[in-house]
Amino acid sequence: MEMALDIFTIICLAGGCFFAVTGAIGILRMPDFFARLHPAGKNDTMGVSLITLGLLVETMKYHYGYLVAAKLVLIVLFIMITAPVATHAITKAGFLAGLKPWEGDDA
Image 1 (tube, rainbow, N blue to C red):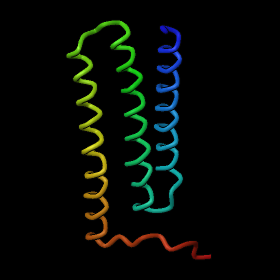
Image 2 (image 1 turned 90 degrees about the horizontal axis):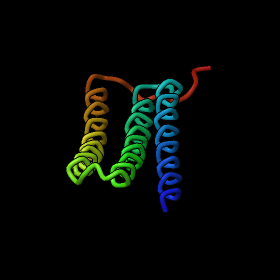
Image 3 (image 1 turned 60 degrees about the vertical axis):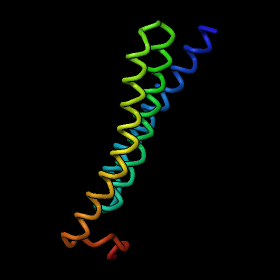
Image 4 (image 1 turned 30 degrees about the vertical axis):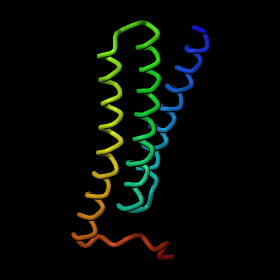
């Protein structure tokens, strides 16, 4: 059972790192302001959620206590609530400031 928890933790941490890295690459590769906010909101939220899930399993495995587990759950809930709202607010601010969405290459 302990090995299964270790494998699950490794999968969660590796998946979280994958989403975080692809989100960072997506921010660099996207063509405009609005498209860059998509990987910032989606991938980073998923990356943090998976990493925290892996940490939650390790917390329960080594008996750190329910207070630590509750803090990890609150962190995930906070990230899942605030990241989409912040992305929407930033997008709306950019649109109201006059930024236009990318419509393709000018070539």
